[in-house]
Length: 327
Image 1 (cartoon, one colour):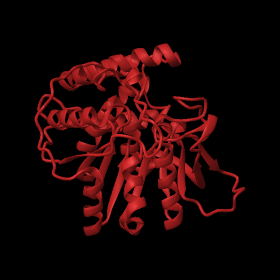
Image 2 (cartoon, rainbow, N blue to C red):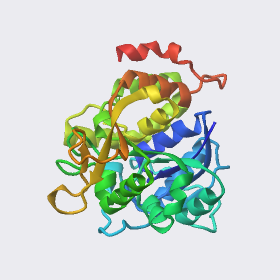
Image 3 (cartoon, one colour):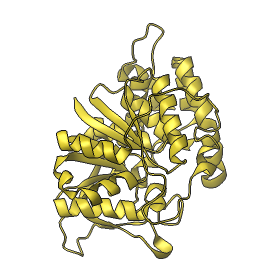
Image 4 (cartoon, helix red, strand yellow):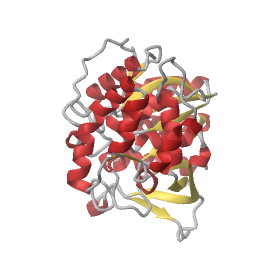
């Protein structure tokens, strides 16, 4: 079992990723930290609590993080995720224990005591603040898997930039720089692979047939998302980016890629773009592992086998989900 922290900005696909993480026996979640991204940090913290409550895992603490990016003006993505950040499902707020420290303080104190891995599903403002303040703690980070960036795929908030890195490019750049100085690599789960993870209406209906309760929850939070994807990308269904980062963390066969030095552009027309030196022009040691290939069906089998329950409370085995091959 791997000790981890999930840094996130829930968000529809963050909520699905949290569901997967909470249902994955390989993960020992020390805490969830939130950051402004898809939605403002207060709303994201409330949404994280809703997911923990839904999954009956309110034992996991939530630490509210940074409200604004390092330098850039904050721009949310509520046009994509809805006025409540959960597809305008408007699930009622739930009570949850308020912590006496913020996300950066929690991460600093935790890393002083033990080595952990981090799955970052939103802008990396919290992590940048931590590494800029305490670069010595880099040695305590076993792995960082970041959903963000893009190698060859087009962007989702500009022609070249993915939202998380576009929202706080200086934060992302600081993290890649910190990993370069430490001789470590960020695992970049970018749009090249996440765009292959599409929740289609047929798959959603299959989910509802197998587990009506969970299916209805997912239907309510993704309907708005599906409408957005049809209007702006011509997709029937919705790309669920963040759960792939969790799936990859639990199963490294889920994606393949290559090592490279990567920089994040912080100014101008290409702000937020990940410049991946795949041809080694700069002759620098890699600070990233760039994921480029994945299998959408393999992901869906893992995802559904973790989050869905039968009537008797047991989970589905992946081999029982062979109908996915036809959907």
